[in-house]
Image (cartoon, rainbow, N blue to C red; front, side, top):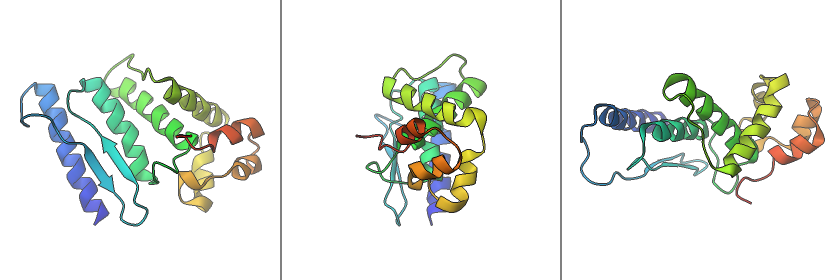
Length: 163
């Protein structure tokens, strides 16, 4: 069922992108927030698409899709997950759509830089740890320590983002 919802979500979002690219009005008035829920964990992915510039919209969409791949709740999302999502969206948006577009939010920039520091020497570290942990939000400091990551970096990555 969740895969069907994801496909419907993408179809709607592609229509919104098409509207913005063609500068046509397919939707009247303010668009609703898009919410995708996983019935087991109850995470939410919310993306407000109304009144966004195309670059910002693509950046946010590519950011939020990372949360769909490793669902969690807002309360449980870690600096690691937000950092990975921000890093991905930054690279994806700039490589494919809008050169020189970056978030201005300092909190997201900070966690993106933490994620980049983690990945620079071992780009497969998350994939390797997820073989045992299943979800990014389940990764603990000790998982990083076992992979020879500095303790101060590991401690920052596993902190809750919304604290």
